[in-house]
Amino acid sequence: MTAPLMDLMFLKGRTHSAWLDKPMEEALLRKAYELAKMGPTSANCCPMRIVFVKSVEAKAKLKPCLSEGNVDKTMAAPVTAIIGYDLEFYNQLSKLFPHTDARSWFVGKPSLIQDTAFRNGSLQGAYFMLAARALGLDCGPMSGFDNAAVDRAFFAGTPFRSNFLCNLGYGDSSRLFPRAPRLTFDEVCKIL
Image (cartoon, rainbow, N blue to C red; front, side, top):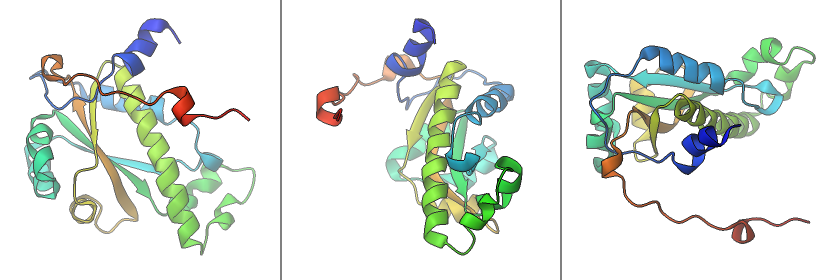
């Protein structure tokens, strides 16, 4: 990975809350997904599901689900991705992990299904944000919303559940807060 790309994805990439009034091509969402889907998941289970909230009608449906502090920035964002996960992901395993009967590992095991879908869907959501950044988009991930309300509004009648939201577009860098500190390697890591 080249240094400018690492800078874009990690060092200069920031969580945005203010957005420029700049059109965003829908093709970028497709490209970001095409990149993100290549990231690893356990048994290639690929449980992430995304709804891109873009239209005025869809934004109106999302608005009452948001915590008060997230309403303005989400309504101003060109797109909000609802990053979710499929609790029936294992039904795709014959396609995604065809060399063994991986579906049988999950059938009738709800806590294993939940843990696997949530963990791997979270990984894929992170891959998606990094892919979006690599394509020049800014991200504003958040968890300040009513998951049950989002699930009723956008995933009713499906086995999908919301995990987190991510506003997407071109951020207004002039309105960023100073970068918050991070923990050091020694505070977090141990090599045995």
